[in-house]
Amino acid sequence: MAERIVVGMSGGVDSSVAALLLKRQGYDVVGLFMKNWEDDDNDEYCSTREDLVDAAAAADVIGVELEAVNFAAEYKDRVFADFLREYQAGRTPNPDVLCNAEIKFKAFLDHAMELGATRIATGHYAQVFHKGGLFELHRGKDVSKDQSYFLHRLTQAQLSKVVFPIGDEIKSEVRRIAAEARLPNHAKKDSTGICFIGERPFREFLNRYLPREPGPIVTPEGVRIGTHIGLAFYTIGQRKGIGIGGKAGASGDAWYVAQKDLGANALIVVQGHDHMLMMRRSLQAADASWISGDLPEAGSTHSAKTRYRQSDSACVVTRSEEDAIAVEFAQPQWAVTPGQSVVLYDGAVCLGGAVIS
Image 1 (spheres, helix red, strand yellow):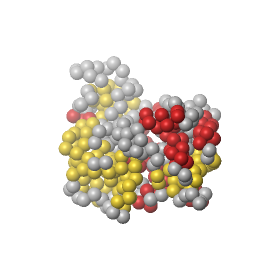
Image 2 (cartoon, rainbow, N blue to C red):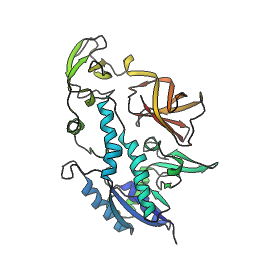
Image 3 (cartoon, rainbow, N blue to C red):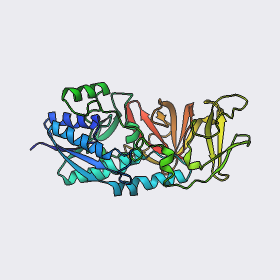
Image 4 (tube, rainbow, N blue to C red):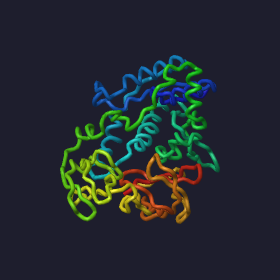
């Protein structure tokens, strides 16, 4: 009998082509659509129903069964609750990282095993290699689409059960394959942003769950220049929507959020993208997770990024506590943000990472 692989089909072109390629390779492919959010199913911004229709249409063309599974309760407990706690604490979390570790490669993986699968597959742009008795997570071939950053918390056990069929493809080739196979979603626009927020205004969404606690907007010198609606509604590096409009200081440059003073409930802003308070040569990070199971060699030189759409930068990492690290960069990093992940690499290999504290 052919090996059964359950593919997470989101309705997008990437996961559809992942299923198509596995089907062509002779695997027993089953598609699985995950419903992870249901608080506002009838909202204009919620695309769950449309995505399910797209996934079903693609599965029909490919010739695979599609099952829809509701993981909304698990998502709310394991991902969304943490998301809100982090924002309330003044940090900016990355729920996609936690969703991968807790839902897509845990709840989904468990369900797939119950369906008789030996492995699961997704449409992520990343690669897995088995070397020296260990599973390694590598960047996707398409550097502009590489998603290893979001997968850095996966374990050896999880990686041993995962295949990324499009990891060695570039996006344009994925779309070409989809069009050639006449998949109905071959030209569908890529989804962006956090899955449970969709295209809705972020502040509007957050306001449903977190109270507004206004306070002063101040310069590093302590000069008050405005009032914020609550520290949770802003993130380090933010330029638009701060609410101080054309209040130009001496330089006339745009204002950026540089820091949050939780004790004083103050938002500290500076003028200029490269202001000294926007740059950091070092950081502390906690809740570290390493793909090999072990911290990279102390004091060794690697590269790291502190946000997804960022180029790697050379750095040295050392252990500061049991599951915490200190990272020293060769060059200053812009807008290092507590709550986001610092992810380490050794060339193409993703080593793991930790949450910036």
